[in-house]
Each structure stands twice: as structure tokens, then as C-alpha cells.
Image 1 (spheres, rainbow, N blue to C red):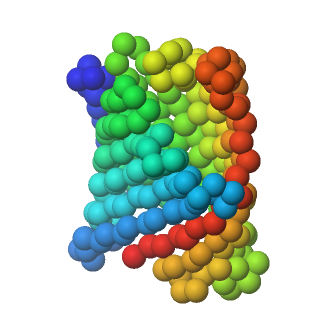
Image 2: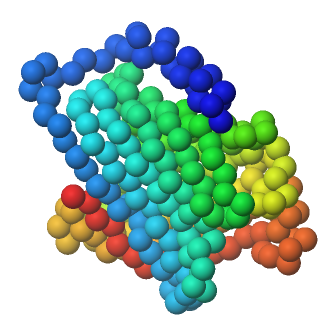
Image 3: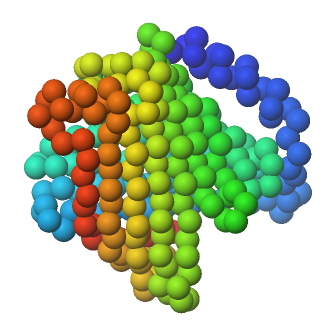
Length: 235
């Protein structure tokens, strides 16, 4: 892991040295934000819940980020991960992020070095992409995109998609190389206030390639559609 972190740090040094963005001079206070993007349950399964949250603290150009997401079903945690990242603005609306990711579930746990970009693409698509480098030559790539459609001042329709790729098979966690899975969701929320919004939505996920083969061998489904109910909050 130390070797992976060193390589990531060296690759970032040249990028950060030529950053084209500038801070707000002396008017640059320390700010913080906590965002619970999703906390939801499966309407058809009272025992299935999931979450996705992130928080940051810092200044205009430099921040520390914490990201976490996971799922619980039937009283046990099926997946849970935590990322701790340093974030540096490298272009208007775009941050370069790097740090560390810890997977607590599924077992066995895994550790990854992280390098990625998060920002706002043209036409206001919110993008979050990251390359993960683990032990024993393991690699993974995740790309997420989200868009917000303002139906009214309070009703917001939000489509989103997440795609995961892995560099090699990992039989212990039933993850296959290549395109592993795609998850797509569509959520309609009502902003009671800007900081709190309950929502209802549909979430579809499907595994592919070797990951799907592992799932079939274990008698599990390779695709799932959920009707979800939850809320979003930030402060």
C-alpha cells in the first residue's frame, strides 16, 4: 500500500504545481458541510437499507473530504466503505482528490489508494470518478454521474448512474474483472426546506461478466429493481 500511495503522490505533484484556479485572497474562511445524499429503505423489504454520505472541511481551493456508503439487509452489513481524501481545486468547478479507501464489507476487508476527480461537467452534470489501487495488483475504477431537474422550486427529479470496473478477479469477494456492475436510479424529492427533502424513487442494479458468473454460482440474482423511500439532508 505504501508503494501505491507514493506513486499516486508523485503523479499528483506535477498537476497541483500548475493549478489554474485562485482562492478568494484574504477572505477565505474555514468552511464545513455534511451531506447525507441518500438514506433509504426498500419499500418491498423492510430489512434492507442503504446510505451514501459525504462531508468536507476546508478553504476555497483545499479541502479534506470524508465519503461513505453501504448497504444493510436482514440485520447484517453487506457492504460498507469509507474514503478519506485531500481535495485540491485544479480548474473551475473541478477538484482533484486523492487519499485512502477502506472497505469494511464484504469480507475480507480491503484497502485502496485513491485518485480521482469530482466536479460539475458541462450541462450541470455532477461527476465523481476515482481510480483505486489496492494490494497484490488490484485496481478498480468507479464513475458516477447525477443530474437534477427542477420541476418546481421544491420538486426535484434526480437521475443518476454508477459504473464499476475491476482489474482482476477476486473470488473472495465475488468480484470479477472488467465491467463489474451498473447501478441506475431515479428519485423524486420534495424539498421541505433546502436542507431536508424526503424522496421516493426506483433503483436498478445489474452485475456483468465474471461478477455475474460468481453471483450465479452462489445462487444469487444478477439484477435487482427496488422501489425506495428515503430522505436527503445537509447542513
